[in-house]
Length: 409
Image 1: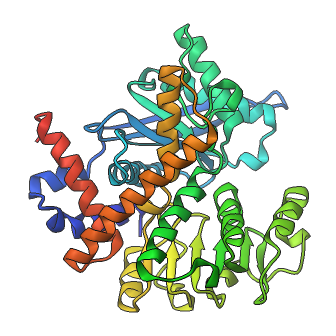
Image 2 (image 1 turned 90 degrees about the vertical axis):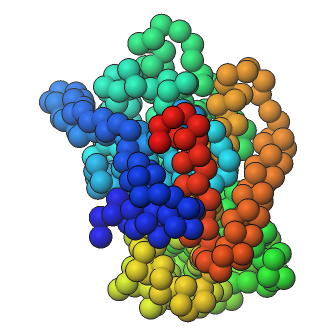
């Protein structure tokens, strides 16, 4: 199923819970603006290449648009639209005064040199600069983009506008006004939510086993945090395969090896990439790409908890099956919102020039994430619905209220 259709299914399921009218539901399913461009980059060879690019702005009733930019060969308008819509929901779930946005470039960044990626970053800002800015639309890193890419985007934007604007983009290097704690924020926020959930269920996190799918920044940090808390990480995967050990993996050593050798297949004996799904673990943490838990893969899952750090890792059909099996799924729009929460902190710091200590960032992040979990969990319990349905219902209700206050409904 197309990613944006998945989003509309979630909205449809949550609309009645949120008390939305048909008109309100329809309004919440449409982006405000779809921007497209073809980015031309001069390659190191001297030849030119063109890459399709997108920026989807999805409802700014609650504040400026906010969302990352990904460089990925499968990025397309449908995927980027779905991710922008989920950003709208995510910001509303955790009470951040932003709307939703997302950007994408259809490119395999692994085939580009560092200079070519930098040129692509600048070309993106050149194409969309009229629609970006600290009060309009604030980008951030996403799949295959990083603080270095954000630094070049910021520099290009400031060249175009002729003034310093550190709040126009987040996920920047610390030297350029980035926030301390941003590099680990997504995983830190997810673990804060997981701890709150387990406290409700009176389950000791140190007594759990876990399988983590994906060893990028968020997945790696989640694996580290879980291991630090005493959880036994029994499976860990990247795009080259799955490392497994029922007695528990040495997470720190394996991630250090991956950093040096680029992939797990060069670190140790790996099983199939999808073997992580069927690992004998209490907790499954999808931290890779979209639609990993589908109708054809969900039967392999043995976990009783799913902590969605990736965006859209579970299709609606698989989600329904997990609910009937009694599996607790902490949805992406709650679980991975730590990244946008600290992006909001970075935006505030950039606007005020008051930069916070890491301890302050971590404390405020934990407070926001635990508060959001409490609101979602209480709503879910009162209505006897899943955490995903509750999160969407609360978010849509908040966005619709903001639209009504602005006279847009």
